[in-house]
Image (cartoon, rainbow, N blue to C red; front, side):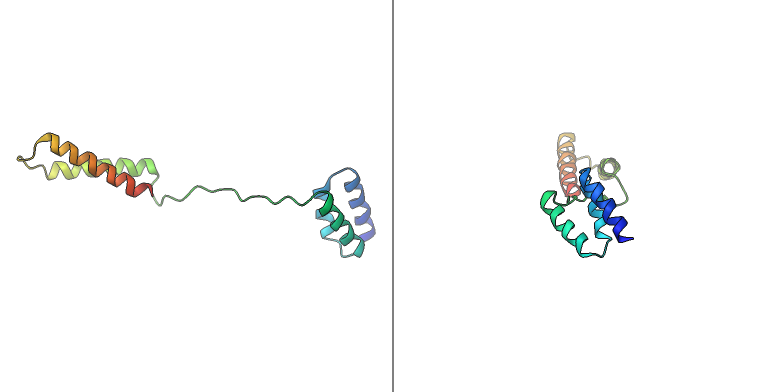
Length: 108
Protein backbone atom coordinates (compact mmCIF):
# COMPACT_ATOMS: atom_id res chain seq x y z
CA UNK A 1 0.00 0.00 0.00
CA UNK A 2 2.74 2.50 0.89
CA UNK A 3 4.47 1.89 -2.49
CA UNK A 4 1.27 2.87 -4.30
CA UNK A 5 0.94 5.92 -2.07
CA UNK A 6 4.54 6.89 -2.75
CA UNK A 7 3.95 6.54 -6.47
CA UNK A 8 0.82 8.69 -6.21
CA UNK A 9 2.75 11.28 -4.16
CA UNK A 10 5.50 11.32 -6.80
CA UNK A 11 2.92 12.01 -9.50
CA UNK A 12 1.44 14.82 -7.45
CA UNK A 13 4.90 16.34 -6.90
CA UNK A 14 5.73 16.13 -10.60
CA UNK A 15 2.48 17.92 -11.41
CA UNK A 16 3.39 20.60 -8.80
CA UNK A 17 0.44 19.77 -6.55
CA UNK A 18 2.61 20.07 -3.46
CA UNK A 19 -0.09 20.48 -0.83
CA UNK A 20 -1.90 17.33 -1.93
CA UNK A 21 1.39 15.42 -2.03
CA UNK A 22 2.25 16.67 1.44
CA UNK A 23 -1.11 15.51 2.78
CA UNK A 24 -0.57 12.06 1.29
CA UNK A 25 3.04 11.78 2.48
CA UNK A 26 2.08 12.68 6.03
CA UNK A 27 -0.09 9.56 6.13
CA UNK A 28 2.71 7.25 5.00
CA UNK A 29 5.00 5.66 7.61
CA UNK A 30 8.12 5.17 5.48
CA UNK A 31 11.61 6.74 5.50
CA UNK A 32 11.26 7.79 1.85
CA UNK A 33 8.07 9.66 2.67
CA UNK A 34 9.93 11.55 5.42
CA UNK A 35 12.73 12.48 3.00
CA UNK A 36 10.26 13.69 0.40
CA UNK A 37 8.44 15.73 3.02
CA UNK A 38 11.71 17.43 3.97
CA UNK A 39 12.40 18.27 0.31
CA UNK A 40 8.84 19.48 -0.17
CA UNK A 41 9.24 21.82 2.80
CA UNK A 42 12.34 23.28 1.15
CA UNK A 43 10.77 23.68 -2.28
CA UNK A 44 7.31 24.75 -1.15
CA UNK A 45 6.90 25.53 2.54
CA UNK A 46 3.53 24.53 3.97
CA UNK A 47 0.96 27.31 3.95
CA UNK A 48 0.04 28.54 7.39
CA UNK A 49 -3.51 29.77 7.23
CA UNK A 50 -4.50 32.71 9.38
CA UNK A 51 -7.63 32.17 11.41
CA UNK A 52 -10.65 34.01 10.16
CA UNK A 53 -11.42 37.07 12.23
CA UNK A 54 -14.82 36.70 13.76
CA UNK A 55 -16.76 39.78 14.71
CA UNK A 56 -16.93 40.57 18.36
CA UNK A 57 -20.01 39.49 20.17
CA UNK A 58 -22.23 42.39 21.19
CA UNK A 59 -24.28 40.43 23.65
CA UNK A 60 -28.00 40.13 23.11
CA UNK A 61 -28.41 43.33 21.12
CA UNK A 62 -26.75 44.51 17.95
CA UNK A 63 -25.15 47.98 18.05
CA UNK A 64 -28.08 49.51 16.12
CA UNK A 65 -30.67 48.16 18.54
CA UNK A 66 -28.52 49.20 21.49
CA UNK A 67 -28.28 52.75 20.10
CA UNK A 68 -32.05 52.89 19.66
CA UNK A 69 -32.60 51.68 23.23
CA UNK A 70 -30.19 54.34 24.54
CA UNK A 71 -32.06 57.10 22.77
CA UNK A 72 -35.40 55.85 24.06
CA UNK A 73 -34.10 55.63 27.62
CA UNK A 74 -32.67 59.17 27.47
CA UNK A 75 -35.95 60.54 26.14
CA UNK A 76 -37.93 58.69 28.78
CA UNK A 77 -35.72 59.99 31.59
CA UNK A 78 -36.02 63.58 30.38
CA UNK A 79 -39.78 63.30 29.96
CA UNK A 80 -40.25 61.93 33.46
CA UNK A 81 -37.80 64.29 35.16
CA UNK A 82 -38.77 67.38 33.23
CA UNK A 83 -38.72 70.13 35.85
CA UNK A 84 -40.20 73.45 34.87
CA UNK A 85 -37.27 75.47 36.23
CA UNK A 86 -34.71 74.10 33.72
CA UNK A 87 -34.68 75.77 30.34
CA UNK A 88 -35.14 73.66 27.20
CA UNK A 89 -31.63 74.57 25.99
CA UNK A 90 -30.06 73.11 29.14
CA UNK A 91 -32.28 70.03 28.87
CA UNK A 92 -31.11 69.53 25.28
CA UNK A 93 -27.45 70.00 26.25
CA UNK A 94 -27.79 67.46 29.08
CA UNK A 95 -29.46 65.03 26.69
CA UNK A 96 -26.65 65.33 24.14
CA UNK A 97 -23.92 64.97 26.77
CA UNK A 98 -25.62 61.93 28.29
CA UNK A 99 -26.07 60.40 24.87
CA UNK A 100 -22.40 60.90 23.96
CA UNK A 101 -21.21 59.41 27.24
CA UNK A 102 -23.48 56.41 26.78
CA UNK A 103 -22.28 55.85 23.22
CA UNK A 104 -18.65 56.00 24.31
CA UNK A 105 -19.29 53.51 27.09
CA UNK A 106 -21.09 51.03 24.82
CA UNK A 107 -18.54 51.37 22.01
CA UNK A 108 -15.71 49.92 24.10
